[in-house]
Amino acid sequence: MLRISKITDYAIIIARLMALQPNTIHSCAVLARQSGIGEAMVKKIMKQMLRAGLVDSIRGKKGGYRLVCSPELISLAQLVIAIEDSIALTECTESGSACVHQSSCAMASHWFGINQALYQALDMITLVDLIHKHPVAASIPIRVLEK
Image (tube, rainbow, N blue to C red):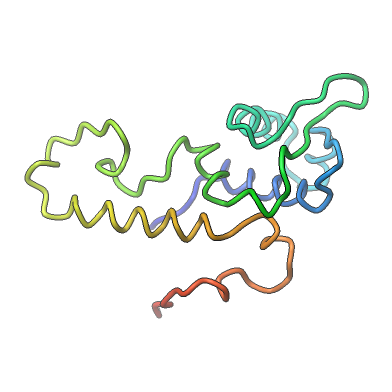
């Protein structure tokens, strides 16, 4: 099964909450309460988002974090990369891959294209898209496979 990690899922939930009030300084305690995610996890996520340049840190009694730019300029691809360090479906699509089979693998060239398609799909979805009630997938040309 292909799935994003729990911390990435949580980061997207937190970023969406911040996008609802983009000019507000958000404390980790409030984000934890609003999301139902533990405060320690929220702090970890915010540090990663800060390191990636997606949020600013404001010190002081009324400090916290705020988005560095408008929510329509932050994509899911940026969030995934902020938490996971890359978007890579297989080892060979990660930069610096040391897969011993890469030179003889018939799939390697295909995985790069598949990985790029996933990146482009995630890059088309912004935090603003996640605020609206209509499903995001409706705006992306995806062929849905039945189980």
